[in-house]
Length: 118
Length: 108
Image (cartoon, rainbow over all chains, first blue to last red; front, top):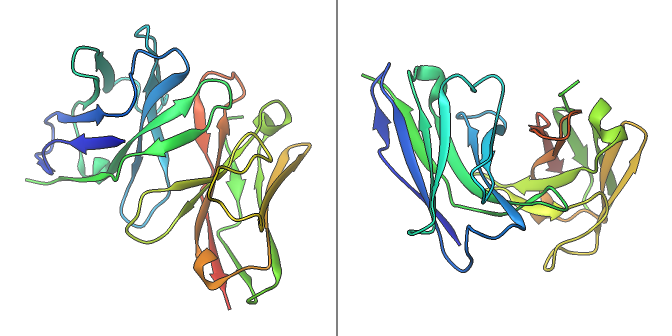
């Protein structure tokens, strides 16, 4: 089970911060990546980035300069920070588990809507 | 190339067969996964590693791949299959993730 949490409203130019709490399994498993995917209203899915248990991160090149994903093993959580947000970053943000071998996102959180507006 | 291309919309008559396709250069090297998304809900995986169906997904769903094209076939489409479908794979480097633009399936 994955659950996103964080502010639903962020001002332009500020930093979007979300946390994904994982239950029913450990994020320290080497069998999975832990990732973020977003979906602007009425649009398709966009991969934001993944993190592996060893801290290695992979980011969407279009967001790489503004995004950071980190893990907190003690809390079994991972987080997303997206800096200098604009209205274009308004989206439902999903956290998800991605299998290393088959490369699919097999479990998803319910998603959280983040609106960028002043 | 890091793009996956899907038809924006497809329709099928109730009980008939429909194929949803996904094209991209990276599919020559890597398998696709498929996700079903209904309004207001998170995506749900319906096919992984080309032709593997997760538990709980009806056997009317099947997957295949040839060259640069992956396909999701629904044999005997039901009203509850009406949804958006997204394909997903690695990019050509193998390190990054790409999603197709999605196909809206209408069951008539």
